[in-house]
Length: 482
Image 1 (cartoon, rainbow, N blue to C red):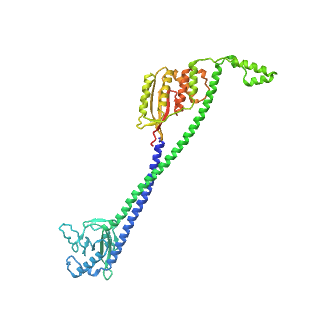
Image 2: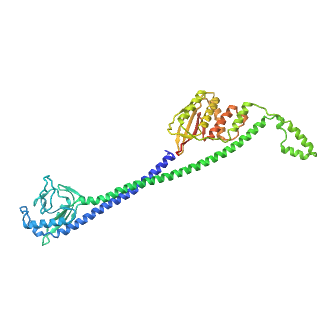
């Protein structure tokens, strides 16, 4: 599928903008993901460092003696709980601190001094889990830390009945170095999300900037492509005009030569057999008396007869020759629908045929409205006389270019005899040479050739196919905005 230059220009600009936005957007997203990952690693490293240091301050020997029946008012339990609460308050964004031990039937809370949420809505903090309460939805990292007696941290935020957290766990020991349990710290994510929001704001602004720069890039590419296409079109138009001008000049030369030949053959036979100026000069040199030669030459000049006149055919030849002159056009804006209505009305009134406009162009176009109308009317008049029947034509939009609309007019010629006659005339006009003789063409054929040449001067291309379809490809310019 071949796209128009306008579509290709927009496609190139859109592709450039999309590639630019995609590459820069992907790079920015990778930087954003790396920043979030670095922030998570920094927070996790800080939390691990805090919980590891805090675990070394716990007395494992005292902690080992805490049982399910130990009272919260027990001096040793109270002392350890207050020590852990001071650690929690000193740490940044730590919501809960507690110790856990592993029993055969699961993970159990031991010391948990942290203030709880108001889950029942009574306006007071809920009591913390009682000593030796089963932690039935303990995260896997906590279980791993208890089983392997190692420092562990949540890989991703997890959610339980107390909220959503990132937690770190560190083992603590008694005086003999025996493993006692794990100290856990739950990091409240509000601080993490607050720090993350700054990165997200930067990322959001970066997305807007990337889109804006992408649009600018697309516009620059579109402008450069359009300028390039315009330059190519201008060069191609200049080349075509140069070739057309050269062909026209050659054609005019041949036409003038043929007109001279045509007029020469209309002269009497006696005059055509008279010597040329060069022959007269040669004879004059051989005559001893120059005056006598001059007298004979003068007598011969006075015997030149008048040309024969055949007015209709001579007028056709004259009009045919005049069609090769420069055409003066007046550029104006008009609507094609109105123009085709005028054309169809005229050729119907004169019984030349009918013309149907199948396209739809809402905006005005530019060109010499009157010359186009007169030339097409004259063309239908001549063609209908050649064919001896009315002409039925249809015009549609062939393609849209950057600066003009290319239109295609199609005429079907059914009569094979008349089609052969027209094909001969169109071959003459397409070849743009004078292999034909004006005397061999009728006045009607000369008139049609004249109109064909006028259409060619209006940048029209006429083609007659072997199946009798006459196509006229012509164009009208788009209206230029001021």
